[in-house]
Length: 455
Image (tube, rainbow, N blue to C red; front, side, top):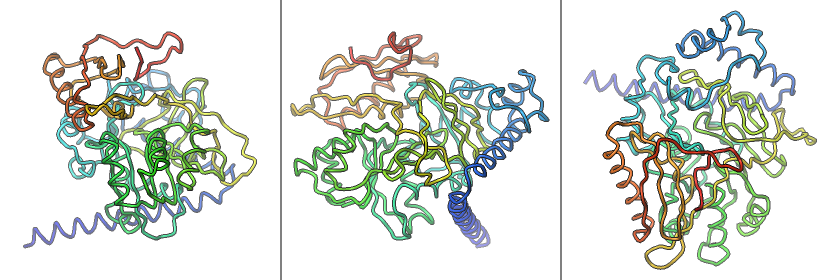
């Protein structure tokens, strides 16, 4: 009896703490929106110095990395940003256990967790949100947040629609069946405090399009969100009168916006489109609306440096797995903010991470699609990097870099997952070959890696 009372009190205490964190973060957002630009930059720098010093003291990787570059703890209060060495996904994953600032997380255990757990609401050790992704680089990455860190950035989602404390039905179409960024974020909106304002429906982008249409027609969402190319396909179905919904807001997640297609989508649905810019490394980095004429980067919880062909991301609130001057092969273009609506950095609509939609002919002779972000979130234990080479409308090659010694077993697991993916999409007629390679080459023209190639 006492144990039951203790457990219930602990659960209730965690819920109260979550509510307090979210409310405080929501209020801070509203306050920071009224700051001057200079005050926001000062706050950003203060948070940067704080995360730098925390990482130096608590992360063996960052301590050794900075020390080897001649940086002492006392330097971190004044050091110029450009003098802080950069990292990338390879650095973080190669030294993962040393990057972390806590003792109860290990890469091996986390890999086992995401291999076994397919429910995005599952927390590792009932303490940590875990997100995994391959991203456009094709290389697997794992990113961990405490409950408090997750609750800190969650209220920023309210900037994507006209938040009025009423409960909205929100449908999201994306990759499901694992701890992916999009479905982890949306699924959690049906839990705790946020469930008072959101009734979510998560649709697997890999379902047959007819099934997606049926579920949307039944649900009748107020908010329709998902990958940009998926929204475009749904707009075509709406125009053909196969889909019949009346969302008040459209939300693009995870892809760049093509202005011509955006006009078409918003016209068909007769609804404005907002834009969520984020990564597994920092789930909410920016938000865009028509009235902004671009995307505002959220300077009080992240720092994004724009470089010629990439960005450097610093997550200003994740102390568990510090992400500091972390290279991502996106690119942004800073705009002159003539409207000055918010004190944050304004950039053009993001056009990075553009991969084309994969169209195959299904076993009924109809054309249907597989979204490329299915493969950015494709995970099999032992698979280090992947690339999809399209050969025809019914065939492709899956190129795999496998770190495990038992390559044939990993190859078998990849085949089983691909079979399941194709079966669910009614692509049982589509054939594939898995080719194990030592490395994946860059595109000769652009010098960048392409996750999806047409051959």
